[in-house]
Image 1 (cartoon, rainbow, N blue to C red):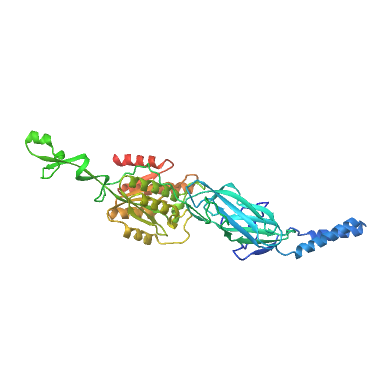
Image 2 (cartoon, rainbow, N blue to C red):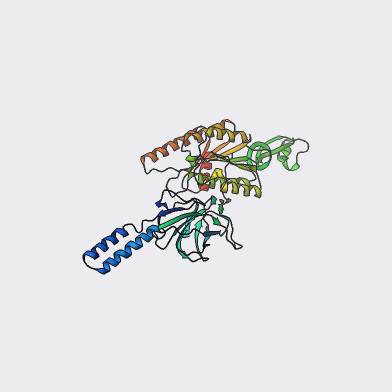
Amino acid sequence: MSSPVPDPQLGDPRASDRRASPGEPIDRTTGRWRGVTAFALLAGALGVLLSRPSLVLAGAAGVLFGAAARTAGPPSSSLGVEREVARERADPGETVRVTVTVVNEGEALLPDVRVVDGVPDGLTVANGSPRHATALRPGKRATFSYAVRARRGAHQFDPATVLLRGFTGAVEREVAAPVDPPSEPTDASTATARLACAPRLDEGSTVPLGPQTTGFAGHVSTDLGGTGIEFHSVREYRPGDPLSRVDWARVARTGEFATRQFREERAATVFTLLDTRESAYRAPAPDAPTALERSVAAAGAVFTALLAAGNRAGIAAWGPTAGWLHPGTGSEHRARARGLLGTHPAFDPTPPERTFLPTIARRRVERRLPANAQVFLCSPLVDDPPADFARRLDAHDHRVTVLSPDPTATDTAGRTLAAVERDRRLSALRGAGIRVVDWGDEPLDVALLRADRRWSV
């Protein structure tokens, strides 16, 4: 649940170290009338000394009011909360309306009701406020709404936090109220307390691939002669060769039949492997996207471009949680990839909390990789294990391309040193013959085109 921000109208739910859990309310004093009794006694004493009946009466009233505040109990917590999310799925950056209704299900007046809805950590409030204050007569309800901005991932709303105070305000009750679905949901709404946001898989990127291919036809040029477009070589004519491939100029010149061969184009099997370890959640600034977020965006673009070119594409996670999509083609395969990148726990927008051994995760990936698969390794390269993994894959005859979003900055000496270390790893990989795409602030297409030109030299 998002940490509540202190609000002069709604109070601060963090005033106590304890927090309410569903079914377990917490009662505490607010300290609103602290010192009233002492002040009232002082006023009464002054009234007696100065023979001022008005001060004596005011002091007596203060003592009675202070005593009543001290003996007041917490208000009844018979309150119902309903939440309505406008839709269950959204694209990144879209706003989704959330409507919360609070109902007084008891028989007593609730003079002071303060509600803080359980907005997930991964969502930001774009419009309105998830906080509301009101008074409720028995059977009455109050409704408020706000809008959240969708962010990649599966987001679960938490119970709403409710603060109840009586007329004196001396005692408050905090309740983590379970939220029910709306009693009469609209056709456009959902009764779920989840919001799933998957990245868009837009076409447009051109992905440079190596010659490692499968036996299926595709668009990757090979060194094999056969059918294709680009001329490859000439061989002796064999019975059954198509007449369109006979080198008639050679027949006319020498009288010998020969067959022209063209460079075959075949499909490739390519895995986009994402570094999902905790170090992949680095960012150059607090409000900048993390390296993992950029890796997910790059993986979606690469995956879509590969499918559009007739290649077989798969996705894998290298981190504490296994995430795997077998290579395939087609629109259904693309939809599965979007769901995997959007909501699978392996690609969660928040850093993983549990520890793991990178070598175990590495072996898990190596065992499942097809022998003829090329690999696009997306990693910020802020430490050595990704570079070691790339060299290991290359040694196992996988054509490896490292796509590295740059999360470094140079505003401090420590960050400058980290950037220098990252550049050293990039240079070492290039020296080992591994293709590297250093992705800075420019669009991904520009980084891929610049790298492809360098590789073609």
